[in-house]
Image (cartoon, rainbow, N blue to C red; front, top):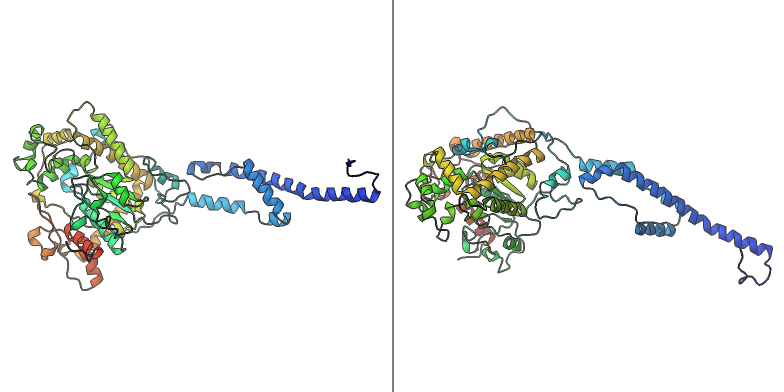
Length: 526
């Protein structure tokens, strides 16, 4: 065993014994290292077996590779004592318990409701127009009930799997849970026309103002982001002058173009919008924009629809309101002829584009349910989405439609109709997967109860009134066409904080936009 090169003569017995002793002593730590590595491999195998189901929930697993084995060996050799190393071994049961608790945080929401009955927050005219499963095979029936308020991370993330937003399993960006959900403040709301979007705008205005957030407001005190032009970043006050370092909320009317919006808003921005039944929407647009040339000459909506093929000119001002107005607002090509051969293909492309750019689409006919979904998506409270209806018409300016008129509208606006059908179906799928039918009912009832209580505190006579009955002319909403846009009178309130809260709830869109502009850019005078 001894090399002749190192021993030129027979070594002394004492030297050989000393050499063998040293070799054996140096091998003991190596043997201990090997044993410890074997134990680590067994532990790793045990963990992998016990947590295999976590792959479904998005947890990242760590497998023993050659590089990790080398690093582990080097770490073990550098450590002074195997006893100290064993003392530092993690509590595997505790780790597994914590990971399971993180993934399955299903604590129910405790909402105590009274027996007070509150009318639904919906448009009376379209109560009979709500889409039913029988109208098209693309409408899905509700999924099996879910009763938990908090959902696993993987379930919430699946809502956004269809978008181009890259979400890593370890990120809580879109997860909703009691411990990880953080309120979102980077928001883009595409404000569509005549869809209850003014009420959503008021919610965003109040949320942002109360937290000193910065709004992407139109330049030179315009009320819209130069609609109907495609949005461009220089439409926003403070962008070209670099007066604003960060924008939080963009929510004024625009024709959407994602590439330009992304130049203004942060990368983690949440995008959402709202749709309305095209029949009800068309009737509202016709009344509200009756002074526009495309509508002015027609004696009725039915008469307009009979002459659409000859009177509609896509290049003329405000003609976009007469044909697939929803698609136009989303920045899509709205000029799709009825019964076009490529209608299905173009509708599929339009739907895919909207799903790619937006995280959530609300439905006007189910406004309160939409607010609850929005509340979950933004990680806001119930009070944050509390609102009164704004920019709504009185009943005397509504026109009842004949069944054949409704069919004409759906045929003429076929692209909008297909878009609406798709998102109406996916809306209810999201309700079932993210909130659950029973929990949704509880939260909607809680929202309506809070709204009713707030109305008693804030509103004189408890509801909206015609503009001729408003006591404060500064709170008169903008009147357009033949629409009679209602407003609110405040109760006499002595507490200033309550008064300001109530005042913000009923401030019309134009007045509120001017107020925010003066607060955000007090030194600009155009």
